[in-house]
Length: 75
Image: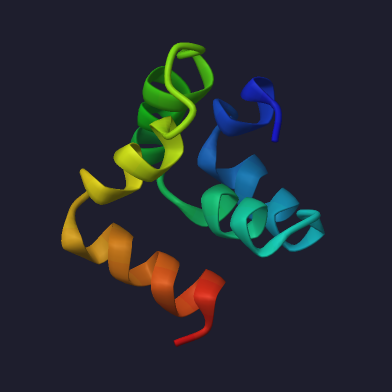
């Protein structure tokens, strides 16, 4: 996912979400802008940690983590 798409207004990302290339992209595009901005800051803008995405997800509120499990992992 590109940084520009993640920082777009919610209305645009909701339209783009069904066209995402992967379950992870579709899930992320359906998150509120604050969550997407956090992902950009803590994952995309960091190049020093190969596990930044996993760390970011684990630090999210329970509702965000659970939505990832349900929508991406399918459980």
